[in-house]
Length: 509
Image 1 (spheres, rainbow, N blue to C red):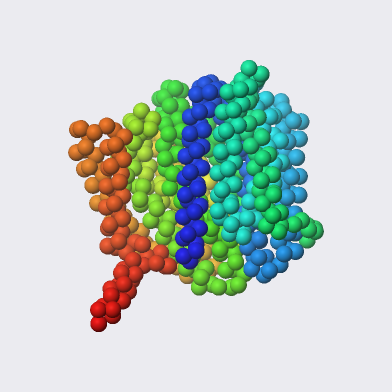
Image 2: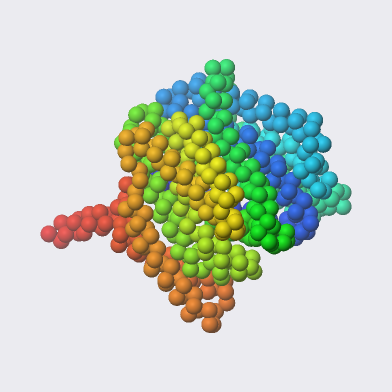
């Protein structure tokens, strides 16, 4: 279990670095291509990412899970067969998607108001083939628990992409429009990254073998996961259409409705999903870990890992909740120069809990071969979200999105935990831990707010926010130690200190 925590630390560190570099890249891109060019690029890229979801969601996870199982059995033939079959399926699907876009270009053109968007989408299409190779081979490394290599390759791709974009826009901007050059740089970075992971796979002894026996299990396991990711990708665009219509019907102007939606989805939600960076890192480690434990039927270890995962998701959630609740307005003012986004952040901060818990419980179901059940649970949650928006917007306005998401992800989390309870004959509803986490968050809220009010008289906003967040986090961690929140089933600070004191007493005697 300690190895799991070390792997989590590696993945989380690289994930933060990669996202930070991506944030810097976005700043450079916005300055190099301008606001209009960035808007055109973003619209095209959002459609492209929906297409990429078909090949980069279910297949890598299935490869990872089965690699872990075959590695536990020392079955190289099965491992290589799974990888080969997934590569063939991924490449075929990506080629079919490319052909569909090219053949039905008139239909896809209806999605865009600027003709450059369709041209950018055409430029990005070859990336689908290379992305399938890249993601599937990384799935194999993931299954072998090569977490450093998995994270390093992702970080390397971001570095290459940033370097090529700046190089192309700085040197070749006289040849093509800058937004096209940025798209070409993205394609080349994906080609280079896929070659790198392929070389790593072969260097580590990876091979390709008869895929025929594995086509059916690969498709069967990956399909529900892929559908969940695709539905998730399409859900926000659908909501983006429904909410403005509902708000206009309440008397808001079209500009006001779009502004509120932009504040919610473009400003607030990215901050709400920051804690999921740590949870997604845990998801990457928990799936191969649970899969190998299932293979060897170590059910006690499986239960420990799931208890740890849910506790960790709650623990991480309550690090951020008190900060967002007490400092929402200045946070919105600092990042976006928009106090309304801060108000929305304060109102929606408790959404972090179902975001984190649903993410980790879905990963646990996937590892236990319950992908279809996870898909059904998410579908029920998505239906609840749509109903909430349709009926609650009349009473709550834009806040219906928050309560709809809480209903969606909270319902999915509840159903996922019920399924885990039934499958493993255990109780993973840890209300006691949730209550203690909330109690520890209260002094964090009060102290961060008090610190901010004191320092606001003589300190700039950035330093004030930084110090206030540090103070709030320290208080949460201190009270977490008092209430034993750190007992994640593999290390317990109270026991650790008591053992240390016992050893010191023995030495003195």
